[in-house]
Length: 217
DNA sequence: TTGCCGATTACCT
DNA sequence: GGTAATCGGCAAC
Image (cartoon, rainbow, N blue to C red; front, side, top):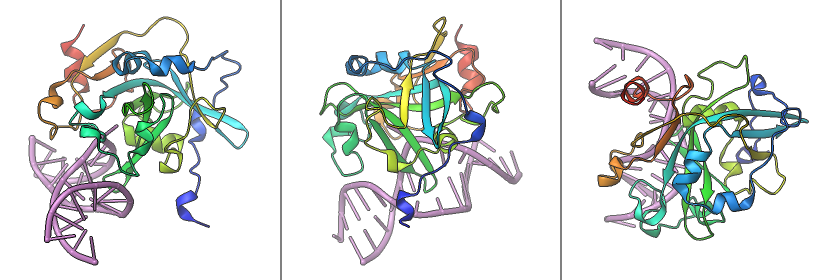
C-alpha cells in the first residue's frame, strides 16, 4: 500500500546466472580498503539483483570515488550527517542510494570502516549479451534498469540479501581516469581525478566520453 | 513552513 | 552548445 515501499522490477533483459558463471562475492575486507582502490577494482565487477526467483545483473564499467568529509562534492562533506546520508557512515559494503533532480536514483557502495562516510558512485554498467548498450549508461539509468530505489539505501551487500556484488572474471579491463561528472559546484574538488571507467566499453556514460577516451591511450 | 537547488537525462538549437 | 522537467532534502527563516 505504501508507495514508498513499492519494489521496482529489474529489466528482464538483464537476466543472467551468477551460479553458472561461477561468480564469487567480494569479502568484507575488500570494502575496507582505500576508496580510490575500490572504485578502480569495481570496474568489471557484477552488480546483481535477485528478484522473484531469478538473478538480474550487469558489469560495472564506470565509477566515481567520493572521499567523505574532506570532499566538497560528497554528501558527507564536512561531516554532514542527516537521515538521507546516514548510510554513508556505515561499514564498507553497505549501499547508499539517493534521489536527485526529482526523477533519478543514484547507487553508491560505501567504503572503509564505519564512520568514514566515503563511497563509490556506480555510474554505468554493461548488461548481459543482448541487452541494449545504453540501458545502464548513466547513474540514473543504472538504477532504473535494475530497479534500485531509496528503499534499498542502507542495506548490506554482504548479508545474503537480494542485492550483491560479484568479482569479474578474466583479464583486468584497461582503465581510464578523469575528473568527476556534474560536480562543478565543488571548488577545487571538481578537478580531482576520481572517475574511473573501462577504456574499451561503449556503455560508459556522458557527453565527455569520446573526448576523454581519445585523450587517453 | 518556505524556497532553493541538485553525484541527471532528454530534447532543443 | 543550452535548458526544461520535477520533487525530496535541507538550510534558513
